[in-house]
Length: 178
Image 1 (tube, rainbow, N blue to C red):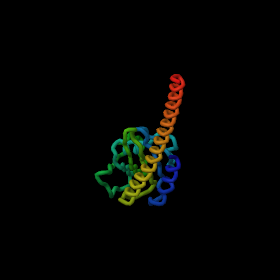
Image 2: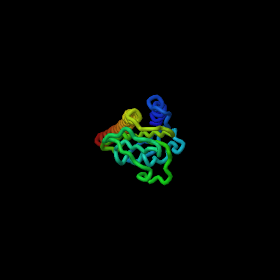
Image 3: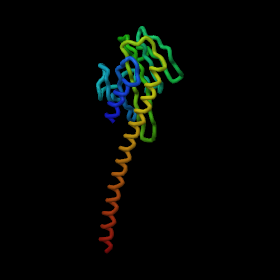
Image 4: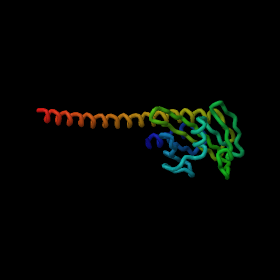
């Protein structure tokens, strides 16, 4: 899973303008944890940022514009938030966008919040938001596939152990009856 996070950080530079600082936050069974980050404020294994948590809770792409940043693109799947909305006491001039992509099944929630932060960007446009949402979807799919394969492997191992126990009980029963 960590490799997927690393590749996602590298891919961000190929699909995003303006050299943002990306962060991949993993959602695993309702818990948020920074998987990988190039942001100076976040480290792998650390607590998710406030905007990542907001994106997770709202299920929408969250845009936190800097003081001088215009927002030229919004949809019903995006929400513009302020530092005060996120409980941030010292706002910055940085623009931050967080895009969630979450899968839910009987085992819980699995997915990611892809977050990018620019130190200088005049306006948020569709070409800043859409690639991030697409990348989040692809990273979430990859992590979901890895977690599903892990669960399948655990189930297969459990089945093997149960099969061995049945064989042992069968031999014991045949020995006692024989």
